[in-house]
Length: 298
Image (tube, rainbow, N blue to C red; front, side, top):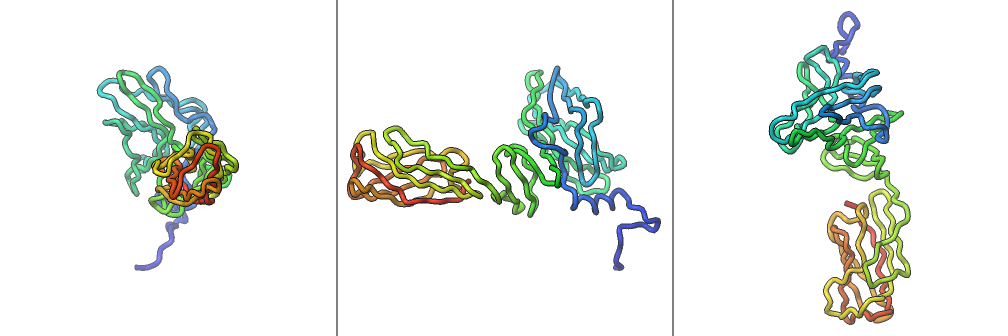
C-alpha cells in the first residue's frame, strides 16, 4: 500500500481527516477553570446550560452563545438519571452541540465514544435526576482546559482514563497521570498536619505530612487515660484523616521508653492507628515512641 497524506488533491482536509490530525494535539473539555460557575443548572423543571461557555471536542471548537440553552425533559415515569453532554455530531456535518441523554435506571447512561465516521462522540457535562416529577442537579461532571491545554478538574469530575493522560485536581491540589486504568499521584503537597489523637492521649511529637502521594507520620505521645494491659488488643491512638490513609493495612513498630513495652503498630486503610503492647503494658503518664513510617496514600 502506498504512503498517504491527509491532504486531498485540492489541498483541503475533510472533517474526518481534520479530527484525526487535531484531536491528538487538543484535549477535550470546556475552556476555563473548575471554580467557574457550573455549566449546567436546573430551574422550574428545565435544564439550563449557561451562556458564554466555550470548549473543544475532538479538536473542534464550540461556544454556547450569548443566551442560555434550555432543555425541558419529561418529568413523568419512574425515577431516572439523565446525562447532559457535549456531542460531536459526525452524522450532521461534524457540528458540536449539547444534548441530553435520557437515563433508564439509577445511573446515567455512558457517553458515546464512537470512532466515526458517522456516529457520535460525547463528553459529560452533568447528571440530573428525575424523581417524583421533580428535576434536580445530581452532579457536575465537566472538566476544563487551562491556558496551556492542561486538564483541570475536581476529584468528582475526572476525565476518562487514557495512558499517559495528566490531570490537575483543583479541589485536592494533586496532579495525576493515568496508566490507562489507574490514576497515580505525580505531584502533591498536603502541608504540615498532625494525627488526630483518640481520647486518653496527648502528643509530645506529632507530625503528619503528605508529599507526592506518600504520607509520613512521626509520633510520640503520653498516655493520659487509664492503664493499658499487655493483653489489651489494638488500643487506638488516633485516626488518620481522609487523604492520608494507606492503600492497605501496614505494620510498623514502636516502644515505650517509660515502661519498656514493645509495640506492634498497625496503620489501617480505614484510618485507625492501633497499638498492640508486647512484654508489658502502659500506665497513665507513660510515653510511647513510634518508628517514623511512610506509605503510599490510597
